[in-house]
Length: 262
Ligand code: PGA
Image 1 (cartoon, protein in one colour):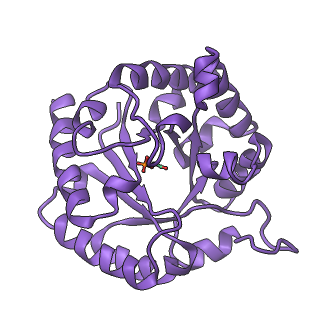
Image 2: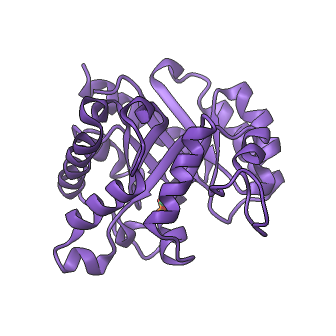
Image 3: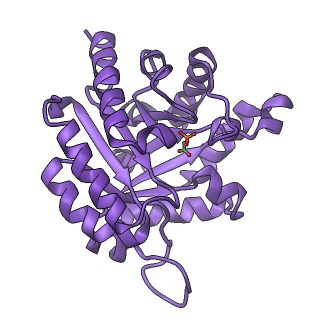
């Protein structure tokens, strides 16, 4: 399994340029004593904050990503941001298909697939987010939903490009203020389905792909979640937006991760 812990946050439509800078500075202090060899730490801020965040994050060994990305290199796409623009601003990760993009802004699996291809083409990490809605869970089609999102989202991506792919399992019903975190047992079962689907698609390369869990991760449940065999990392929203609290979660989770692999 992975020898690194993947942990990061998407700040959604919160934090201005100044607030992001302040946040990164504090996060940098928080992780000074943390063994960075074992951690892939990332922050995905708003587009306007990307450039200044990109400059700061380098000093702290934090990777920066964009919350969305166009699939074309350039063109008449008002309101979109190209891979080259993201890279120029210091982003090396493209977050693709977050639940709010799919369910609030109407993105389809086909659109996510084009974005994954664009990320791979531009040498970026594609962080593909998947997850069933509450209704799909209730109707007993959570696994089917995940399999479709993975297979459609990764259609045409070859095993040799598997190193550019990260997957975040984020059940829609678990995300945000009204969300309930998935239990470690439930997350474990879904991660297994995702891993199996990746294996069908990529063969052995599936085992090199980091699988992150997201959706109401907090100080109380983070250690238990990371102890699950197929959970390689955590993708955290609200609980990570206070840098001191995120720092504490990182330290706790790293200790649990090292115990899991000892
Ligand atoms: P949350 O957000 O931790 O606030 O539930 C997770 C996400 O949207 O990635």
